[in-house]
Image (cartoon, rainbow, N blue to C red; front, side):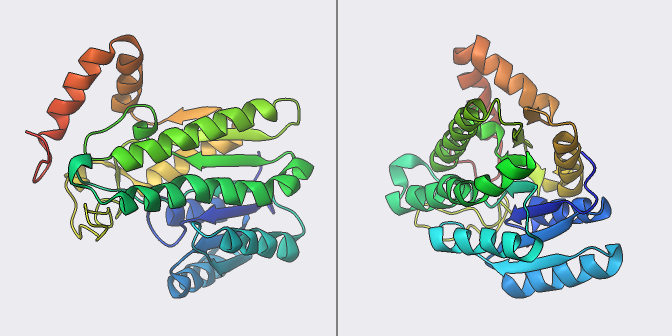
Length: 271
């Protein structure tokens, strides 16, 4: 796909992978509709991208856990540009707490953002994407293939996203619409800093060594390349691919390996 003058909607675009995707699409000539709760930050990003790349970019304040916000986001795109070519469902929350200690409102919050946000945006964008035979993208995680300790709600929401996207892909098989699930693996971003604790408050610090992780910019490049190639699934790291295959072939071994891995994180929840 040539992205020149294509219309791309990105949720969770004020930071991390979403912001990096906006930059990568802008480099390739796409016009953008960026959604996030941080409206002032979004306006700064859109102004910067327009000035540097000569594209058009629109900022829309949107909390994807709210259906009406998702509807407004999509309407802004269709009214402004009269078409939609790509929807990148990127907005997401993480968590870090043992299920036994967890307030159940944390799981509901994660499902509302990670799963329902994807469903709402896709529902309203799909009629336009069918017209352009465009792309629907879900930015998922290895946690959507393999449950991770201390991330019950996060894994559940990403498993749900993966199942939704797989069903949607099959429904749309003969329409020309492209559906891709992107699984970055551990990425250097603020997602662990903003991850929810057992009471729903943000942790405020990362539990892992961020410097050893793939950058958000590299993830964005791979996602945009994957859309251009109309790939089905994008698992981006060797560790992620190995985890997926071990979990399929030797699930009991995967339990032990994942357990051991998470005993090594800062202030480990399991020992």
